[in-house]
Image (cartoon, rainbow, N blue to C red; front, top):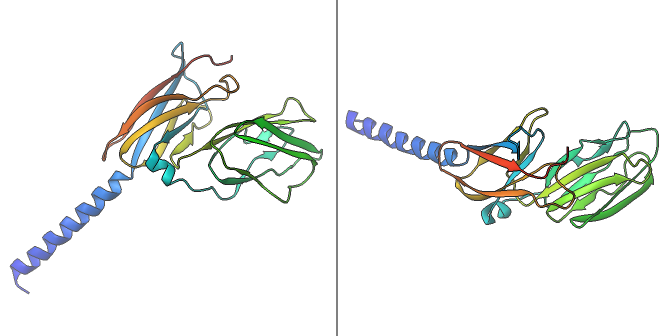
Length: 210
C-alpha cells in the first residue's frame, strides 16, 4: 500500500469516527432544571420530565418497579414510571395495609393484605396517582406516570433535577412536586435541546403547600 493510500484510509477512519461521535453526542445532552418557589427559594425533591411526540414514541415500560410499604409509609414516597409500567406493592410491615387510589390517572384498590399481591398494577395513563392506605390515614405516596423516557427526580436534599441522555429537539419541560395542590397540573415551559452541549433551565413553582 502506498503512503497516499494509507493516508486516505486514516482520513476515512477519522471521518467515520467523527460521524459516530457526532451521532452519539446528539443523544448525550443533559438538561439541568433548577427548581424554586415563588419567593425564589430552592425546592427540593421535584420531578422533571421532557415531553414531545418523538419522546412519546420512544416510551417503554420500566421493569421491576415497586412501591413498598415499610414502617407504615410508602417507599419511595414518590415513584416515577413510564406509561405501561407494572408496579408491585410489597408489604414489608408486620401489619396489613389496604392500598388505594382515586386519582383519574389510575383508580385501583388492593384490599387488606400482607406480603406481595400476585398481580402488579399496570399504570397505563400519564398523570399523577396519589396513594393512600385505608388503615393508616397518615400514609401517602405518589406515582408520577410519564409518557416519555426522559425524566428524573432530584436527589435527596437537592433542588436541581438532571435529565441525561436527551436527544436534540424541542420539548415541553414539565415539573411536579408533592407540595403542589392535589390535582394541580405540573408546571410547564418550552425547552430546546441542541445537538451538542447541555441545557440549564429554571422552573418556578407557585402555590406550594408549606
